[in-house]
Length: 250
Image (cartoon, rainbow, N blue to C red; front, top):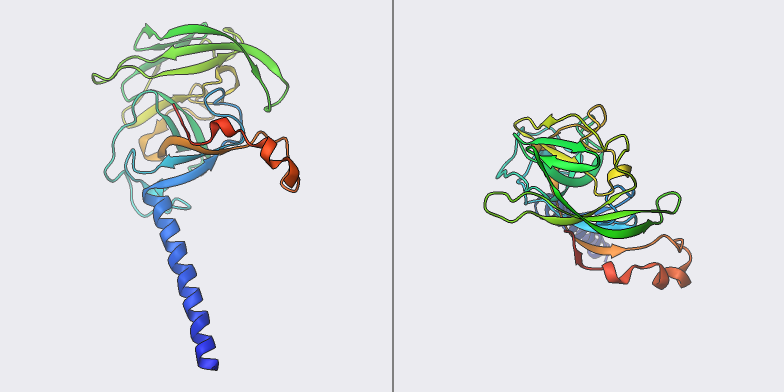
C-alpha cells in the first residue's frame, strides 16, 4: 500500500512538471498573455485589458523565453513588423521591462512629428478628426480629441488605419527633430500621443532593437474597468467590459 501511495505522488509530480513544460513551450513559441497597466495606448487598448501576443510573428530571440536567458544572439526565423503593428518589446535600456506601442517606423525610415502630425519619410500621415473622447481610468478624467490616422502603404499593402488621441498639438512630443531609424531597429509611438513615453524620448526609450521585440498583439481575451476589487464578487459582472472580449487589436 505504501509503495502504491508513493507511486501516486510520483505520478502527480510528473503531471505537474509536464503541464509546466507544456505551458512554458506554448508561452515561448505560440502565445503569451499580457495586461495593460497604463493609458499610453488609449483608445486602442484600455487599462485593464488582457491580451494575447503571438510570439511567432517576428521570429524568436532570447526575449521570447521566460527571463530572457542569454543563450543566443539575433533572431531565429526573424521578420520585420509591418508598419502599424501593435507590438510588445523589452525596453532597450534594461532589456527586462515590457512595453507595448505601435510600430510607426521601420529601418531606414525618417520619422518626425510637427504640430502633432506624424511625418513618415517627409510625408504627412493623413489624420481625420472624429470628435471628442473622454479619457477615464488613468488619472484625472479629461476630454481630448480623437482622430483616425492612416499610415503609409508598405510593400504593396494598404496603410494601417487606427485611432489616436491628442490633448494638444503643442505638447512636449508634438514637435520633434527628424529621427532616422537605424538598421536593425524600429520606432514606436503610443496611440495616446500626449500621454506616452515612447521612441520620441531618446533618453528613455529611443530606437528599439529588432531583437527586443517579443511579439505582436493579436486579441483581447479579457477586460475589466477596475470598478470592483478582487474580493467584491458581486461586482465582477459589472466590472467586465463584455464588448471588448475576444476583440482583435488593430
